[in-house]
Figure 1: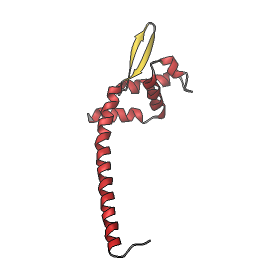
Figure 2: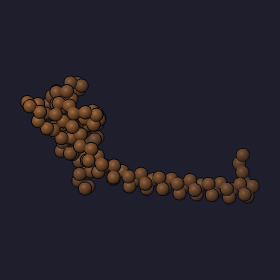
Figure 3: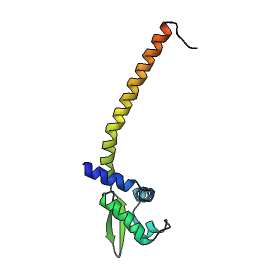
Figure 4: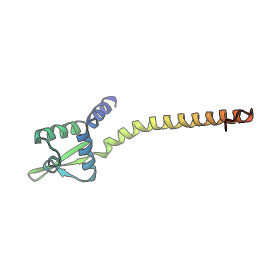
Length: 116
């Protein structure tokens, strides 16, 4: 799973690839439809698409003479599961810190060291 996450995060590290993925989450697009938005060569767009495909964030299917690309939400689920662990860790840590600070503040107020 670590290798897959490395590949996914690498592919999401570039603004253009994140934008392409965002667009493909909304609807299927052809390579040409994707490329028209960017001020770069078709070869450069194809390289970005290849990186996203290698990370399994997008897939393509043939529709006659053209290819349509779409997002693979299952792959993003892997990322969400990884992030969930850290989200839980940090949420719990901040809740403990808040509780600790509240306890300290109550102790100061009880001993007449209220700063207000």
